[in-house]
Image (cartoon, rainbow, N blue to C red):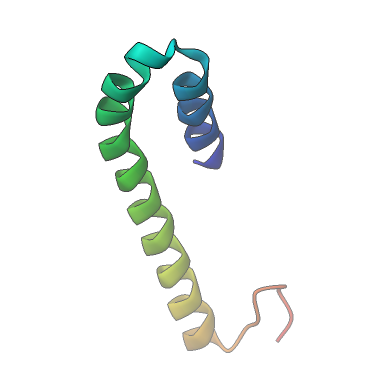
Length: 60
């Protein structure tokens, strides 16, 4: 997912300045959805790790 986020950022930076604002308006919802998905994944992972008693590095 971080690769997609960096690709979206590269797209914004590569366009001419007069089009950048319009592209930003199109890309912003995608970036927000990706961020929300990553936060959900991280929260779910922490919840599962806490439930199992494991630490994020794989050790008990």
